[in-house]
Amino acid sequence: MFTHIGNDVNIRTDRIIGVFDIDTASYGKGTKLFLEKMQKSGRVLNISSELPRSVILVDNESANDVQLFVSPISSMTISKRGAVGFRK
Image (cartoon, rainbow, N blue to C red; front, side, top):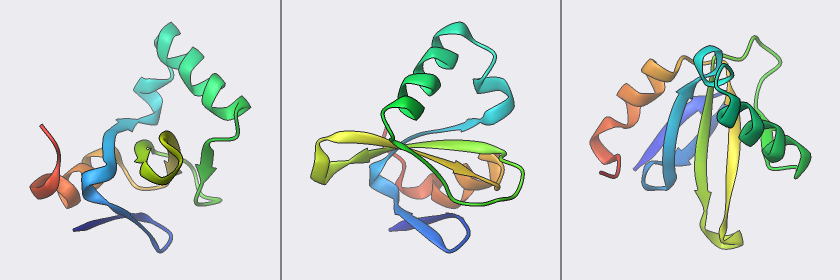
């Protein structure tokens, strides 16, 4: 199953590690450092020129790593779209 995260981008639902609201995710010191590290390592993909509303952390199976997508769709909407297949 796939989850649409905006701008014609679909992610395999079983590869989604977490979906986070960009406003609340950027407040915590640890989260802020993680986001900066991901940005510096080139693992952040901004999929839209619109105002970002969420970040989606995805397991990149082929590279044995993680990728971070910045999406214009709210974290609540993305979570609802992929709720059936989310890992527990």
